Amino acid sequence: MAQKVVEYAATGRRKEAVARIKLALGVGKATVNGQSLQDYFKTETMSTFVVAPLVLTDTLKKYDVVAKVSGGGLRGQAGAIRHGLARALVLADEATKEALKGNGFLTRDPRMKERKKTGQPGARRRFQFSKR
Image (cartoon, rainbow, N blue to C red; front, side, top):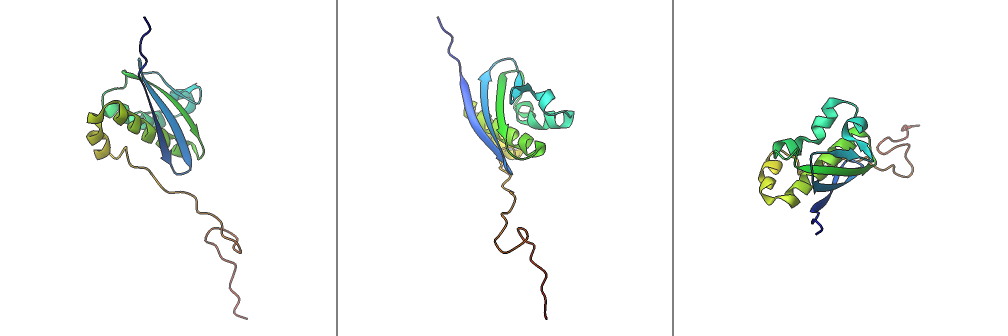
């Protein structure tokens, strides 16, 4: 008899980074773009930042996490994974929503690079004004 695999999928975003998260019942293994979490995020600080929603809800050893992330820098990608992880946890267990929301894990960071406008050297920079 085949065992039913329970999987939750969510998308997380921060700045320009987008992360697709798959959360499945398991032993606590986490992979990011095919690499382990510690290999992808070299510093311990970044790794703990990413798994903070799992630590808060006490589900670190309960779920396996597979993340595919693109765009932005490493810090933005870490934030995107954290956001997606929190959203996936809410799908898995609605009771975790209050704790995650209270700690700001469900809030998306909307800051993005402003586009360059035509006739200007940058997004906000103007050419030097000449009075004469």
